[in-house]
Image (tube, rainbow, N blue to C red; front, side, top):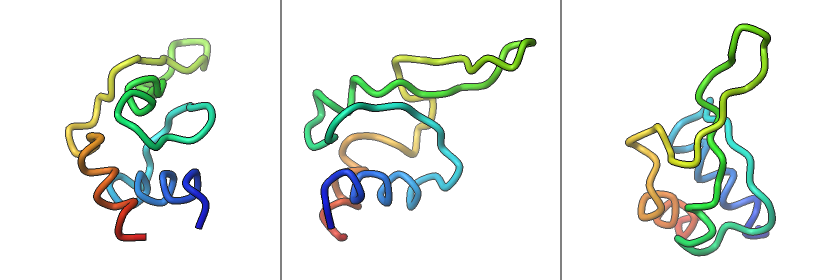
Length: 70
């Protein structure tokens, strides 16, 4: 399974409805820290984006652990 698929599957395992944006392959903590996380919508329906993950159950360590299982 390609790394990008493993990353996406690991996210779904940790939090099935998480929304985020990333570019390329997330295979290091440095790249994980560059993910943009969708935290909601404003009154016009535009997504609100955060540079830090708002979900305590999603950390690089946990994502990497799930990726290694796949």
